[in-house]
Length: 152
Length: 369
Image 1 (cartoon, rainbow over the protein chains, first blue to last red):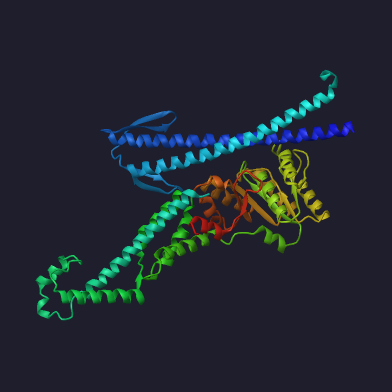
Image 2 (image 1 turned 180 degrees about the vertical axis):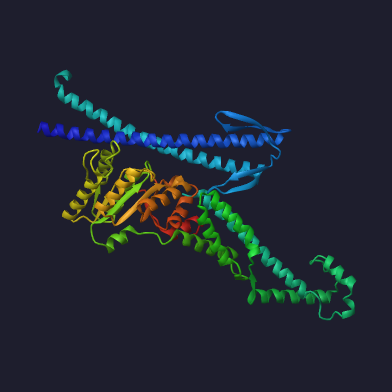
C-alpha cells in the first residue's frame, strides 16, 4: 500500500516536472520571439529617426556601411525619395513622409504584437508558478511521510 | 486575427467605391450636358461664341436661361436620371479601376501576401470589374465586395475538412506532421487530438520526434492532458519504427486516427530530409501536414513551397494565427503551393484550433455581418 502511494507520488512529481519543463521551454521560445521583435522595432525606429532628421539638414550626409566594419560618408542628394521594400521583395518609391508613416504604422503593429507575446509569457509563467507550488507541496508531503519522527 | 489586413481592406473598398461613384457622377453629368440644349434653340443661336461660352460655363450655371427652359431642362434631366436609374447602367472601364487596384496590390504586399498571389487576386478583380456594368441603384460597395470575395476565395481554394476525410476513408487514417523547428508541431498534434476526440474519434499519437531532447516527454505530457495514448520509443531510436508501432497499435485497437509527430527540420538538411522520406515509406501516411507559424508571413510561404518540393505536402497547418495581424501566409500559402490549409492555431489552450474554412475567413476579413 505504502509502495503504491509512493509510486503515485513519484508519477505525479514526474508529470509536474514535465509540465514545468514544457512551460519553461514555452517561455524561452516566446522570449526569443520578443527579443527578435524588439530588434526589428529598434531598427525601424532608427530608420524613422534618420528619415526625419535628414529633412531638416542642409547638405545631408549619412554613414553608409559597406561591410567589414568600414563606412563611407555619403551625401544624400534627394531626401524625399525613399526606396522601400514593402514585402515579397517588392520595392516601391515613396516620399519621406509616406515612408515615415508606413514605418511608424509597422512599429505600432510590432508593439501590439510584443504586448500579446508578453501577455502569453505572463500567462505561461503563472501556470509554471502554479505547477512549481504543487511540486513543492508534493515534495514536502513526501518528506513528512519519510521522516514522521521529526514532526513529533 | 489579421486585424491590420482587415482595416486596410476596408480602406481599399472605400477607394473602389469612391472611384466608381465618380464614374457614376461623370456619366450622369455627361448625359446632362447632352440633354441641356433645349430643342427649340435655333441653329443661328449656336454660334462659335455661344459654343465657347457654353464650354466655359459651369454645368450648374443656369441663370441666363429663361424659366421655361430651366423647367424643361429640369424635366429632361430628371427624366434622364429616371431612365438611368431604370434602364441604364454605368460602364466600368479598366482605367477607372487601375488606381484602386494598385492600392489593393500594395496593401496585400504590405501585409505579407506573396507576389504571385497578389497578381492572381488583382487579375481576377480586374477581369471581374472591367467592362462590367453596374446597374445604377445597385450598391457599388456590394459589387466591389463580391469581386474581392471571389478573388480571395479563388486563391484560398476549397479548404480541407479532416473529419470529412476521416469519415470517407479507411481507418486508421494516418496523418504525418512535418515542418521546421519551433513551429509548434507537437502542440498542434495535441490540439488536433483534442479536437478529434471532442468530435468523437479515437486517436493515438506516434511520438516520432526521437531527435530532440525531451520531445518524447513533452508529447507524453500533452497526450496525458488531452487523454490520448502515445506510442513512444527511447530518445535517438528510429522514428519510422515508432510510427510503424503506432499504426499497428491503432489497427489492433480499432483506433480511427494516428497522428504522427516528427522532428523539426529545415528542407536544406539532406540527411534529415532523407529520414523523412524513409518515414513516409514505412508509415505511408494518408495525409502529410506541413506545420508553420502564420506570423512568419512570406517566409512561411517560401518554406512551405520548398518543403513541398522536397518531400511533398497534402495540407498546411498555420500556428500562432492569433498573433498574426497581417494574414499574408494564410492567404498566400494555399495558392502558392497548391495545397489547402487544414487548421489555424489560435491560442494557448488545446481548444484553440479552428478548421480553416475559406468562406468564413473571407467573411471575417471583409467584415461581413
